[in-house]
Length: 294
Image (cartoon, rainbow, N blue to C red):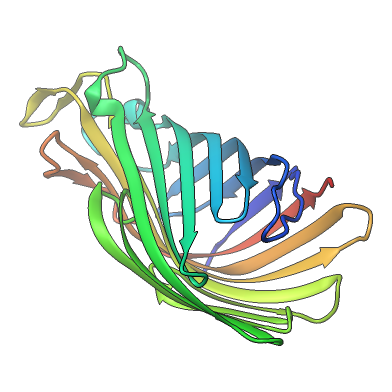
């Protein structure tokens, strides 16, 4: 089995918010570069940059953000019958708005709205490039001196499974003495243990998805000229992660695992299959760096 390699330098600006008090604006900035190789003779490079801000008072939390991702696919040894260069470079530009309201002391409702442009941007931007991502969640929290327990249920609309659609979400969260953190749910499950203030080890399982518009017109064998075709890329990520706080604001991240790629396909404007790249699963390793301020 061949491996792929992620390199993940990140810059983060973070701070802690105290419940029951007015907080100042909390900013988080990040940059990411990743390389995924040998997804069935396909390599993928991803560049990502984002900025998020949150503010909290006694019963409300607000957030806003902007995220840009650049996807670069490179195909090897294929005979598809159409011009693959139209499906090599895609971009997503996502704006994020978040609101959370607490009530009855232990209940809360949260909503995200994340309008997204996802396209190769070869032609003019129109409605085919737009995806109205959103989610809403209701949660109930129980607390004692040593533990926090939270159950959340909701619904989300997005491209996590490769095509824009609604799907349910739920999670069972447990935090014990700030050492054990467990989240069992759908679509993501994770566990983390902090050995001390500097070392932590975790594991996670979660899906990933990209659905992007090809705004150029492409000639397909037997189909003729087609406009607004789509690239669908999705699967599941299973990984282990180690974090080490260097005590100077820097934290190193090392992650290793297996990516199960379910779909790498070209679809027509009605989401009917045109070409299947028949992707394979692959092992990976991730290395990163975070920086905290405040």
